Length: 382
Ligand code: GAL
Image 1 (cartoon, protein in one colour):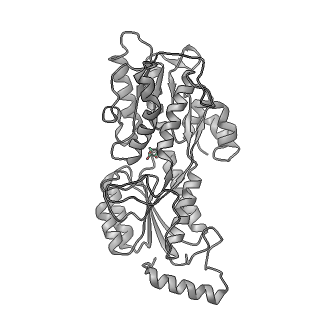
Image 2: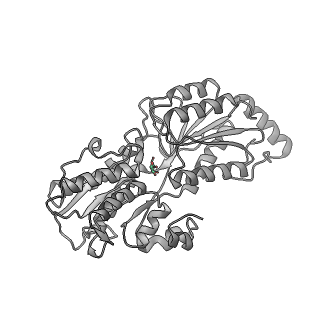
Image 3: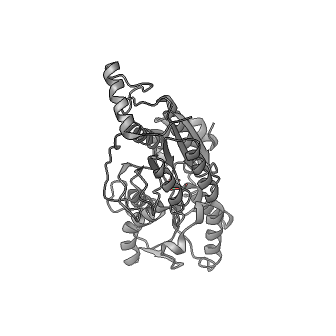
């Protein structure tokens, strides 16, 4: 079992170790400098296994931490808030030295974080910001506002309103679109939506884009827990209400691949498709996460695009941050302004994102070994 991190004591003992061993840290193989990882346990709390991305995140974090010599206690919470709280409490009771947490409800963990702070356990918020707590020590994520900008730009490109380089496309509109957002208890949902609306709002204002349902507030378009079925139901409702006069819907802003698949199922059931090209063109649907089922849909010309966030790199940043804490240091942030969690601005490390259309699958996802060509063809991870 791990032992508590006494920062000063650990720093001192590390200094002694370094002096005695000529700079060779125990157990480390490079990375952030090979910290004193022996005997340290890192609790990793992930939201759910129903989405591939979190499975990949958990696997990547675990593998990379173990490669650095840490013990890892990895738990998934089944998208159930009490389960996640309980799992984190248990990690603390069992002696976790550092916590890495991807919250289900970013506002529900203040109690757990207080408990962590009382036990000198640094907390790294993973991908989703934990809110309303001063005890979040670091945040590793992607540039979430930019994700939204990229999703909206991909929608415009799919509609032909914009070229790849951002210049105006040949289409002029007007186009009917609908908007979807993520879960309101996830801070990211607001960043994605705000980023997207920064691009779309001017075009809604000038009539190029028409949100026929009139639903343009995040509260109206949010999908609780990012669930595919909930998204499918909302799309079905829109089709049978707003579009029951035979009006075509041309595009859908979707913030996440699971939501996109729900939207696509509803559209297919209403007679759209089978592809973006013919015979009754599938509307342009965006996405996020490059989940394998959606990458296949993109390859098949059904879903238009996704935003790829390389979870291997995110795991790496989480490990680098954990190592810094293990060595008694503060992790290096590249953003100290954006992520105010309601109590404080949390120092963050933001990673860049990549837009993927069908033509990008090979270079961005297969050549980088995120997915194999076989997995893309099967629409399933091996
Ligand atoms: C968000 C995350 C997205 C997507 C979504 C649903 O917090 O940033 O990449 O995974 O949750 O799981």
